[in-house]
Image (cartoon, rainbow, N blue to C red; front, side, top):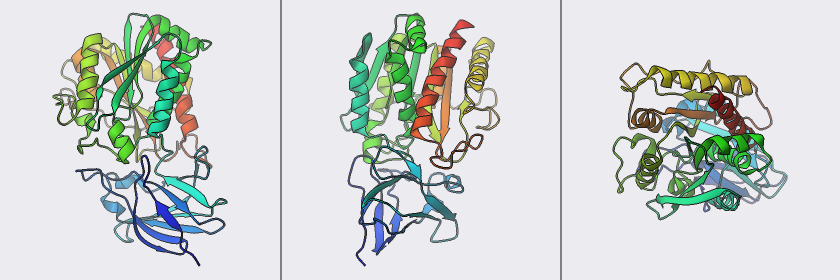
Length: 377
């Protein structure tokens, strides 16, 4: 029987082939450049039509978030448009922690990924379409270490300065699917949510804050192996030009409301993280964050407040993280949105788990909650 072929030599690809025998393979995930972080995988299998593939990803107990593997199912696609979930099992005792994916493709070519990828080509399509929309201004905030642009789309004439930015951690591709949904609402002249927000706000939208890590197939870092969301207290052009560019633009505009969009490996739920531990916290600032959470809970059953990160004690916030820095620096109502790599256990979807489609819908619902928040501000 002929061996299947496996490659990750493409945009956001990541896998190392250890062994192939027929339709079975042993694989490793490549670490981020100059970093110990690894968890994101994305690869193509060919020659497997009608055969049960058995793909073993080993050594995963040392991954960035080993608690992300129990209950996880790998994303799979045969057309790169619809991403379903494959049968996946986790054995923490096998070969240093092994994730085994079993799937029988109907096509001779299929793709597997940690989550449905959002390629840099699709990113450029998103930016081009949004930039061509009426009333949208394009800005390049700066360039990455690999020379890629930090794209920013700006719109609206209102006084409230709103910053939305995503993919500081490049492997969290659901964050840019969220951005796609948000930008569709903001640039659609018939969408009442977009119309109201453009009337009340000046919106600054950065769909991908870490293009180098995205293209290289990293989980969490940029081209220098730097976690951008730990650089916001004192960023340098040598380590984190992406953060320098964002922060300089924010300093120029000011910030009233911000959302940093992410994905969480372990928690099977959508939730928000705030800025409770910053030293400069104001009562009305915290009340604004709590009010937004309540509005979002009412708007969509995909959001909840029971599960999430522990609240940081007063005065103990890490100001190197963007939400804390923005809240402290500008007095803004700032927050981090987290979506799951697994599924939303409150409303599970056996076919897709958490998906690009639900990420896009959540983007619009977050904006609709912002409309209500502004009305009661």
